[in-house]
Image 1: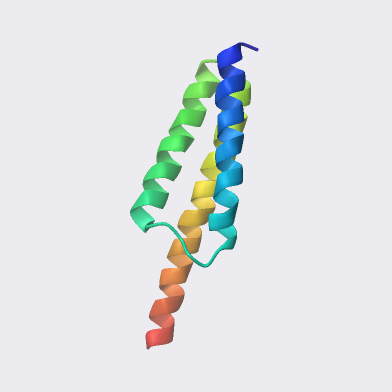
Image 2: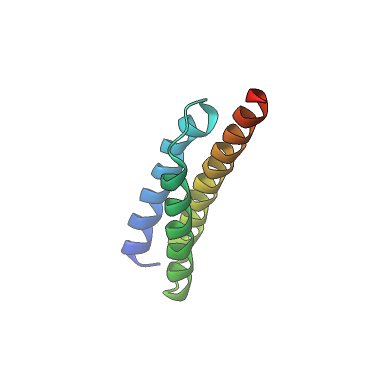
Amino acid sequence: MIWQDVVIGVGNWIFVLALIPSIISNKKPAIATSIITAVVVTVFSYCFFTLELYHSMISSIAVGVSWWILFLQVILKKKNKLSINF
């Protein structure tokens, strides 16, 4: 394992921890922020895989999953608001 893999991986795990308050909170990021970040981080995961940076890949998948969760929460929150208004 090269040092860059460790640095990127640790940084990604910090991002996962930083996203936990947003996941459990009622306040959510904008839908565009959630989907764009989720897609980009998912692509980064594949790039790390092709570079054989497996710790970075796994931790990047965790960040991506966190952003996909936020995206789904935003979608569900908007859907619930629409159904309440009718």
